[in-house]
Length: 159
Image 1 (cartoon, rainbow, N blue to C red):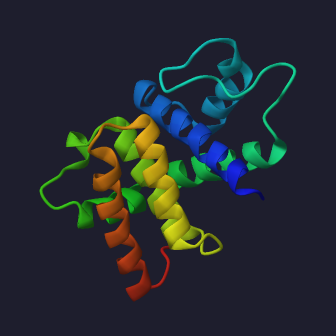
Image 2 (spheres, rainbow, N blue to C red):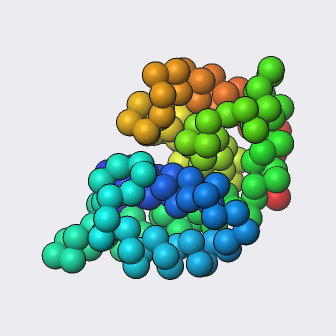
């Protein structure tokens, strides 16, 4: 899968996971269906739509996005524990929702996707944070994901 497809997949996953903050209790299937059916028709809160009727999202992007979204939702307790362990002086509730969504995606990749190099995951998270986060987001996300990556090297992946 081309790197650009994964970047687009990560950005779509970020948008969907950000939406979970706005629509608590909605399942992954419903969020994915709503996103894929409607996001091309209006600007969303995190940027321009990626799809037009003439140029649909590539299947590889869609599959990767859905893997990330379902993985983050299914593994959220373990991901939040991993983030909390390295986020000294920061509770998850204090983190900006966009930053937390990026961290969850990055933590999911680090913990559950050994096929993706950790440095690639961290770099992609930083680049996405530059686009969607605050001025401080890239450094914040880099620091936390780097600590999670180091913890992963010391232990086995989570179930």
